[in-house]
Length: 116
Image (cartoon, rainbow, N blue to C red; front, top):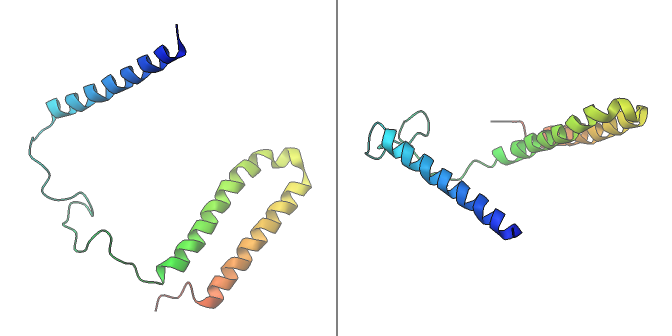
């Protein structure tokens, strides 16, 4: 059997499953009418457009959050291998955390955490 035949069978099976689930959802739905109120904010109608601009003070705070979010991406694998690598891994992680703390101190000094 050609490898393309198995790919076509897998693709066909997936598309048939998606179509079947879609039809099943339409068959067991409570109402055929469209939703009048968007699910945003617990069903309340939105007061502003989704592409509205945010205040400029959100952007530095977002960057700080992303820095610590990416930090966790590095710390999870590090926590798995730190016992096998020894004290060098601990020193490298504290150097990495030191750079992040320096960034937080700089952001604090620049007023990224001030709201008023």
